[in-house]
Image (cartoon, rainbow over all chains, first blue to last red; front, side, top):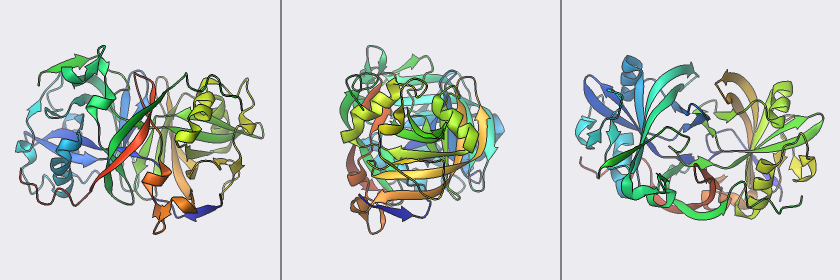
Length: 187
Length: 187
């Protein structure tokens, strides 16, 4: 299959849809983000590429703490609304019921089946976005979304996001076990 | 819904399944990775958290270049095999037919419908993994996987990966348009 070259853009990976939470001026605030990934296995560190101009980032900078909550399909409108509106103009503190873990400034979304609280351990600035590296202090899940004490991803049903179509996608079907399905493969 | 606290682990996000390519000792080598995300919008920079002990990372360190190719479901066995076997012992140069873009040391997988070549612009070391930040120099897609000149994610059908179940998942159904579906939402 011949290949077509496209000019670079952030459409080289499917991405998670995450709600990044922080406390700004004493109130919980949330922004919608997709530039989120894992940076280090242990301690678990997440990397969030966010424009520091976002209202949420004022809170991250002030307290060195943030949260990552994963909305499911039933929260797609609220999640998109958080991406369309800035906490600079809209009060987002009442969009979601929140809960706290160990950190005082990393409010998590109760309606999300999986969420994590993070402490900033490093930041790296790029042209548009600053990467906030957050060490995961605690992970919180609905009991119903666990299987043998671990997240059951089919039940968590995280939304995905892609560019440049700017689309939310459902998490798909289980395909195969890793470190396993390739055992019989012969190149 | 009451929340259950879990000790931290890399199970806070659904992740992409990516084949990271580099040239080691003059030969293409590929490793399977999931700690991959976007770090900056423009120029587009990807962040890959990889243990520097990997054979592929020798090539990244030597040439400052790597590739990211997205396998679809039909490549799950080969992809998993690349995760099970190290290039230190197995010759991975014949697993995939490769192609090159502008960079000489960022071999991409022809059988993947979407791939990108990257130039390392920064590295950040954590306890286990080093984050390789790569500026995307070019994106390559099968013509059949494009719609109006942009990636059609349903056709690209990238595999996803999750911990701690160590599972490959299919990309799911289109859910909603972003910057749109939340317009009518009232918190």
